[in-house]
Amino acid sequence: MVVDNCPLLPQMKQVTIKGRKPISFLTAPITYTFTSATRADTYDVDEYPQLRLHVQYALNFGATPAELREVVYLTLVTAGVPKALNVAPEVRAVVGDLPRDQEAAAAEPAGSRRARGEMTLSSLNDDGATDLSADAILGPLAADFPLLVDAALTFALGDVWSRDILDPVDRQLAAVAAFAAIGADAWPQMRRHASYALALGASVEAIKEILAITIVSAGLPKALNAAVELRSILASQHGDYDA
Image (cartoon, rainbow, N blue to C red):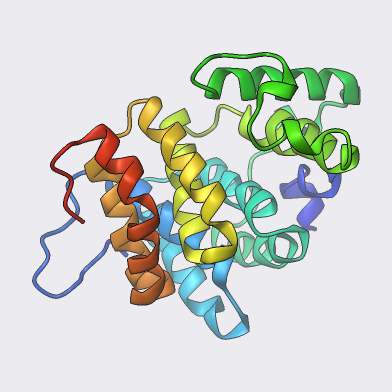
C-alpha cells in the first residue's frame, strides 16, 4: 500500500545534451533525483517508463529510497494530491519496500505543525520576519483565504519543507526543477524558491544546471521561458550572468 511507504501523503539521466560535458555542478544522485522530480510533476501515463528509469538511475548513483520518497512528498506540494498518489506506486515499483518514515508516522497536533511551518517560513525569508502579514504571498491572502494559508503553513511548510532528509539547498533546487517543468502557472513559486536556494548557498551555475535538466524532462520552450523568468534573480547574484 502507498500509505505504508509514504504516510505523509494522506495527511493532506544525467543530462546528455549534444556537445555538453557531464554535469559538474550537481552530483549524479542529485541530478537524477531532480530529473525524477520534474518527471513526476509533468508526467502522463506515457511517461511512466521515463519516471521509473530516472528513479533507477538515481538509485544506481547513490540516492537513497528515503530521498526519493521526499521527491514524492515535494510532488504533493508542487503538483497536487492526484499526481503524488499516482507517482508514489511508480517509485515504489522501482525502489521496493521503503524504510518506515518515523517522522511522518508520529501523530502531531495541527497547532504545532503550523508553528513549525511559520518558523520554516521565517527562516527562508531574508528578513526573518515571524509576522505572517509581512510575507509577500501569504500575508495578503490570510484574511480572504484562511484555509489556503493554513494548508500552506501547516502542511506544505510545517510537514514537507521542514523535513531534513534532503539538504536545504537540494530541497529548494528540487522545487525549482519541478516548478520550471510545470511552466507559467508556477513561475511565481519558481522565482521564489530560486531566491531561497541562492540565499541558502546554491550557486548560479547550479540553477543553470536545473534549467538544463528541464530541457530534457519538460522541453526546450519551458526551459527557455524559465531562464527568462529567472534571469533577473540570477543577475542580482552574478553581475555577468549569461543564460
